[in-house]
Image (cartoon, rainbow, N blue to C red; front, side, top):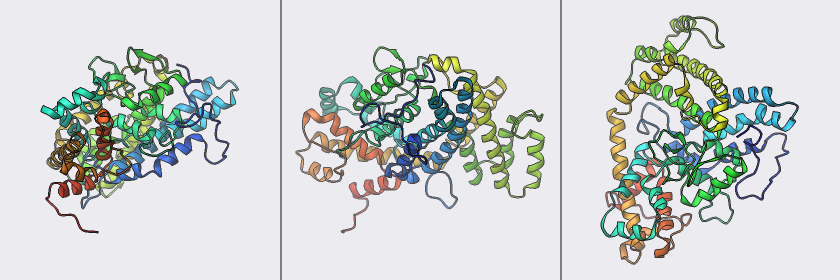
Length: 463
C-alpha cells in the first residue's frame, strides 16, 4: 500500500470516479461526518448502553456521547498524522497535501463517529446474546437453517459482530430504492473496518489482527471487495481476508484512548472507584521532566491541589491524559509506517507502546475488568440483554421459519417494512437477517418495551 492510493472520494451507490466536492465549506469527508451525525441510526445510540445502565440519577456515558468523544480524539489523531505525511511526501502534489493536511482529520472523525453504530442494545452482551441464540439453536429450527444457509451465512449469525453490522448499516439500502446506504466515501468506510474479513474467516486465534473478529456480513462482501480493490488494499489469504487499511489504526486508537479513561471517570462519578485510585492509575503516564508538549507530572500534581471538587480533578487529569496519549500514539503510528503500509502490523497502537506504558495500560485493563465490567449493575443489565434479545429472537425467528402459523402472522406485523420478509423458504437467510437487523437497531428501552408486550408482561396501549 502507499499513501497516494489509500484515499478516494468514490461513494457507495454512485458512479465510478465520482468527482471531489467543490463545496468550499464541506469537503467530501465532512459530508460523510454530517450524513452520520444526522442519521436516525446515530441518534438511537443515545439510548444504548456503554457500560453502566441507563438512565440513572447520575449521568454516565451512553453509546452516543462515547462516539462523539471518540470522534473528537480521532480528529486530533488524524490531524497530527496527516500533517506529518503531507510534510514528508507532499512534494508539490496539491491534492495529496490537501487531503493529508486538511481532510484526513475529517475521515478519522467520521469513522470514529460511526464505530459503534452497529452495536445492538445492552452493550456487548447484546452481541453475545445474538451469538448464543443461534449457536444454541437445535431441532427443526436448526435443520431449516442448515438446509438453506451457507457456512459463511451461518457464521454471520453465530459470530454476530457489531463492527460487521456497522458496515451493513452504512452501506446497505434495506428496503429503499436508493443504492449505497449512507453513500459514504470508500475512504471513510475503509477507516472504519477494523477486521477486514468475512464472518467465516474471522474469530481466529492465529495472531492476525485482521481476523480477530469480522468486518462484513455475506451480503456486503462484494461491497468491501470493491472498496479494497479501489484503494489497493491487498488480500492476505484465500477467501475474504484483507490487510487493514492504515487509517483503521487511528480510529481504533481513538476508541482505545477514550474508553479506558472514560469508563473509569464514570465509575468515579458513581463512587465505584476513589479519586486516589483514579490518580494512581493515570498519573504515572506523565513524565517527570518538561520535555513534552503536555505538562509534566509535578505540574499536574500542583494544579490538582488548586482544584476543590474531586470530579473536577478527575476531569482535569482525563483531559491531559487524552492529549498526552494522542501525541504518543501519533508518533507511534509514524514510527510503524513501513509495517502499516506493508499490512504486517499485527497489533493495535497501544500494544506498540514502550514496556513501561504497556504495563500501565495493563493495570488499567485489569482494574477495569475486576471492578467495573463485573460490577453488579453491569452484570444485571447484561443478563437482561440475554433475556430480552433472546426472547425477541425466539419469537420473530420462529415466525420467519414457520410463516403459516397463526401466531407467526401476528408477529411478522411487528417488523417494519424497512426490513423485508418474503416468507419464501429460499429466502430464509435474508428473512432471518432482517429480523436481526430489526432487533440490533433497537434502543435498550424499545427492546425492553417490545419484549414485555410480546411476552404478555405488559399490555400495549390502544392507539
